[in-house]
Amino acid sequence: MPKPTSTPLISAVKLTCIREERLLFDELSLDIHPGDIVQVEGPNGSGKTSLLRILSGLSQPYDGIVNFKNQKINRCREEFQQNLLYLGHLAGVKGEMTAEENLKFNLALHGSCDNNSSVIDSATKNEQNTLAYLAKVNLSGFEDSLASHLSAGQHRRIALSRLYQSNAPIWILDEPFTAIDKQGVASLEALFTGHAQRGGCVILTTHQDLISINPDQIKKITLDYSYA
Ligand SMILES: Nc1ncnc2c1ncn2[C@@H]1O[C@H](COP(=O)(O)OP(=O)(O)OP(=O)(O)O)[C@@H](O)[C@H]1O
Image (tube, helix red, strand yellow):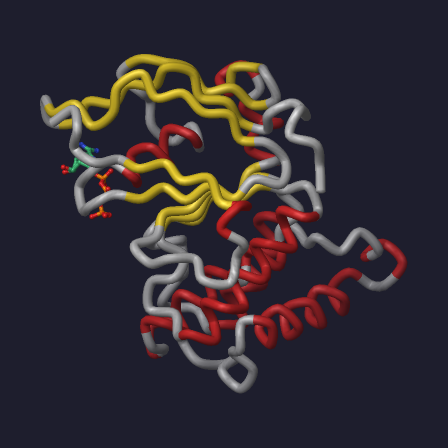
């Protein structure tokens, strides 16, 4: 397990967020280190998505700074984005493409996490990878189904396959368990634990408890309207 004294992957310094003239959080500071699993919790509308988008650099805070390895993310945007996997509510699944085409599209867009692909014809390798990732998210047999014809949970699983495809150490995930069944949630929790053990970090929102992750390993950030 990486030492807690390591350089934070992300540090938020005195973040303030105001939406529709409502203060969602004020001077929120946190350090997220390799090995951390951070659960952002709070009622609907309390600002969880807003916080995740700010930490990802997709939205600007009213005040405060987000750093990647002690550097402002605005000053190292490209490097930060290479180190980040952000999955939002919609997560970019294309309904008019099949499950397999969606994964191939993502591989083309974001690349594969297989570093040995240069020794094998990359098209063949990507084909194999795509099928392997579909199997990991339990979508074997649905390769040729249009994403728009799949169930909500299967649709979500296509989005979640990016977790297997990505090399990025920082995972920021907005409601990753939405529409996912119990077994799928358990697999995701195991994936998060493994990712943290390998020196990555996971920042997620969820309305449910993380049941198979050691509670001592979870940092909780609670947004609770206390400033509303
Ligand atoms: N781009 C925006 N412009 C204006 N208001 C916004 C914007 N994004 C969010 N809000 C408002 O900010 C508040 C917090 O929204 P946010 O989506 O961050 O909450 P949340 O805690 O993620 O909610 P939920 O649990 O329902 O997903 C809401 O009242 C929302 O209407």
